[in-house]
Image 1 (cartoon, rainbow over the protein chains, first blue to last red):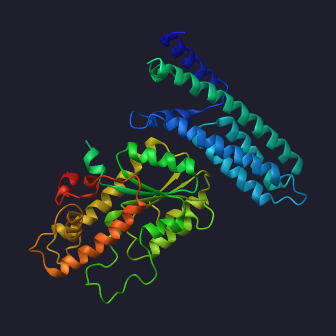
Image 2: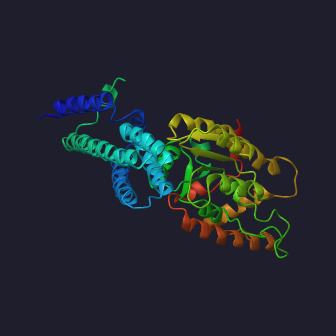
Image 3: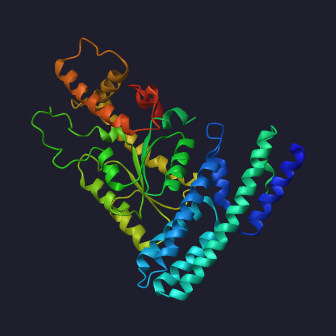
Amino acid sequence: MDVGQMQRQWVDYMKSLFMEGLLDGQFLQLKQLQDETNPDFVVEVVSLFFEDSERLLNDLTIALDQTDIDFKKVDSHVHQLKGSSSSIGAQRVKNACIAFRNFCEEQNIDACLRCLQQVKQEYCLVKTKLETLLGLEQQIAAAGGSIPMMELSF
Amino acid sequence: MGMAAESQFHVLAVDDSLIDRKLIERLLKTSSYQVTTVDSGSKALEFLGLRQNDQIDPNTPPVSPGNHQEVEVNLIITDYCMPGMTGYDLLKKIKESSSLRNIPVVIMSSENVPSRINRCLEEGAEEFFLKPVRLADLNRLRPHLMKTKLKDQKPETQENPELEKQELDQIDEHLTLEPPSSQPQLDQQQSQQAVASNNKRKAIEQGLSSETDRTRPRYSGIATVV
């Protein structure tokens, strides 16, 4: 595959991520903050998001598995996950967290457990997609091409 | 155009989330500010040199003791929701401190809660940013920074014997140059003290390496105002 093909593929992939609501405008903000002085900014932040999310999802699983659930603690974990997903533009994870927090307030255990599954699903989906996207970017860079940001017309 | 002027502005960013610290640091650096980030309110106060009873020290000559931070940090931007000391607590501590209260404080929060926003503004916060903070939001920092810049220059333009700004310029020179031999002894002592504390601070500042960034040209302010 030549660079031009990969670049077109990248544009199509980005567009599909936005169409599906997996990413929102905040992800483009991150891209804007990346320049020659900080070529790995997006990769770094996205990796932090993966680490952070996996830790929090693990903590949430444990917290909701207790016989006496500490909903304040659960809410605090969800709050953090909502914050980091919104900071990188993982819109569907963020939305799932918002719903989750409402059920924390109600102390609705069943709904909280359902929300946890939903957040996990959304997280896994966006993680796979981001990995594919960033992998594609690496291939383009390795082939000497640049990321065609301008061709994203939103 | 604002590049040179803004790189003199030093912003202290406070957030417990590593992702958000990365983000705010990039946002501010992209806008040509000097940035120091810390992960809690208490570390912010430590960085600002806020101690109990730091106002009255008989050994310090009466040249605005403990006020050096006012020039060192031009603005504080802090997250609202943090474990331990919240952004609101930090804001109150800063506004209660005679040496820090003139530093503008901006609060960031992911939640759009009007009562929270009002509480912060009433307590003296200059702005309230909804997270995630965007590049466009940073334009709102400028007026507050310009305000402090003008305030800092007053001692220089008035015939004010306080010499606060000049004092600091001399300290900055000490960081890079040999101390001028003609300088009165009193000044040297103070400067050396300040250099020591500056060096301590320097160890904390990671992103802030170049000497030229630290050195404030004596009359740069005039260019900034115009």
